[in-house]
Length: 298
Image (tube, one colour):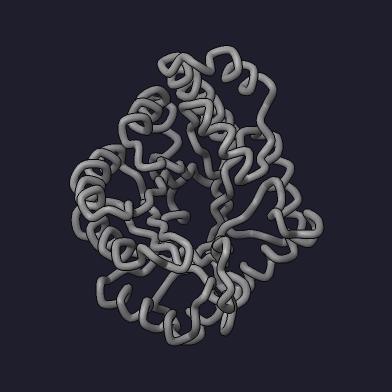
């Protein structure tokens, strides 16, 4: 089933996971973590892979496991970095053979200390999406990513949103956002995107934070703004693991409840493969979430 069909009847709940590099860890992810996530009834689970596609075989294998053993639809990540049309065709063949219809098309992160050419046939995610739809018409649904606080390489928010319009025109059927901690930033971005003619669903991406180093790392990687209140909490309890976990659950719960109150298109959680924390979070907002994600009766 193509994920875009779900938006016709409901708000979506989704999780993102990443394939571990070690084989024994991959097995544990498949048999335990995904099973626990499936119990939370997500509509889809996205599966990442590393720079230059170095965990691609695990990505496809995990996506197939999701398709065959859960109620969720798999969303496989695919990037432009170092990919030729031949490379992409091989991946698309693999996905088709395994019955995987949904692809998150991305440019991909630029690896450090790489001297070989990174872009040949595809430079942008929109190029990749357009190629998929042109070469395999009707076979796949493509989605994309967006940045409420602007892509770090964009010259301006206006330019960044113009690029989103190109992604929509290239066939992408929904966007998930980079993580953010300040909902007002998302609401302003959403308004600007709608004014620019972007009509497809835009799903806010949320990452629960559970420790001090993780918060700092997310700031460095994404350059996202952190509300003073959250920063103060983490500074005060930086050496208290239990306190930070509790604060993380409470803060993220409120953030999601506020997004639901603003009638967003869905919620996408960057799980970091931590099924226990995601389970606690969803239980914390269980009643409201059950109503928000329920299918609309026609």
